[in-house]
Length: 238
View 1 (cartoon, rainbow, N blue to C red):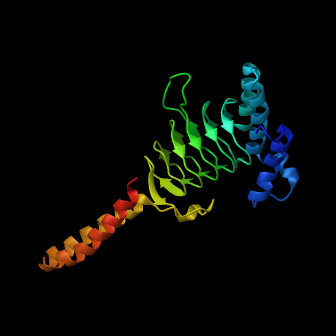
View 2 (view 1 turned 90 degrees about the vertical axis):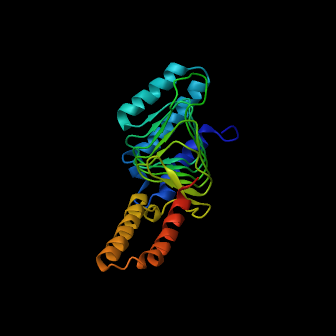
View 3 (view 1 turned 180 degrees about the vertical axis):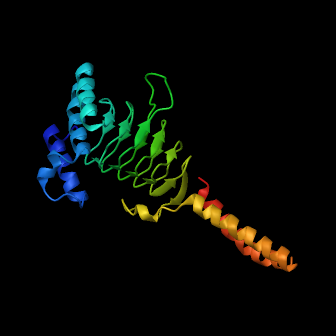
């Protein structure tokens, strides 16, 4: 931010959705259909003013922006270059949050705090290239690593390593160092579904053994199922 002018940063903000959103058909749409873009631009101005001591004016600009876009960003937070808030409705970014370059944020995301202490970092840091999916809540002074993904509606209260995927409530890391692509949300597994399938198979084995009076079949089939369960649990550990 120190080596590039405000206008150059804003120019990048306008170009980012054109490069990353396949839904956009013309630059004219940016003026009416992309509240996230306008929020980031308003933030750029408000942030400069806030850092120069014009706290009320910075808050006023973002207050008006919130009324218009329904996106609440504190002017003191730090947002890097080429950050794209897609759709954006309901996004909240707290005072001490840090968002690095090339981060993608979807609607309903909260980067919130869990402490009322002043003059401390209370909000998360989102490293470059991360994707925070729809409705996710990232809470406290934690770090979402580079190129990491947070699944939709997840609640993250612990650090997420680089190139990892975290899902669930509370969120757990399910893959590490594998998927560096930004999107591919359809590849995020359903943890509850996997556990339900495991329990159903285990019950099925027990029912068959009891009904057939062949309890000796349990160890052989259950051994394979136990391996599946252990593999599942190992992916859930941080």
